[in-house]
Length: 107
Image (tube, rainbow, N blue to C red; front, side, top):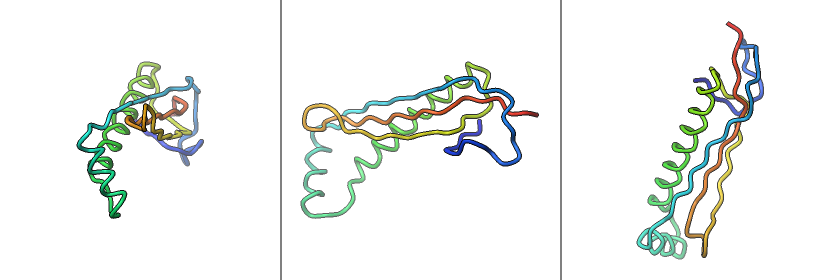
């Protein structure tokens, strides 16, 4: 399935707009990742554990959004917006939310 953040795809005119589709993933970061993340924040550097969790959440959210689009008969999603939020007490959870418009392209 073609997915893009743009509202149009060159050479692929939209035949039908099928509706907004969304995907969301909320993942908790465990205490050890939190501790090591805090240490990295103090001494600098990247937190591989957080990067992996964020990537995992993004994959889940995109898969959920694509599943919704397929159920509508779409062959693409345009205008995708990706949002990242930290939620929960002390920022203990990460949320990734993706949304876009499911479309049917002209053949």
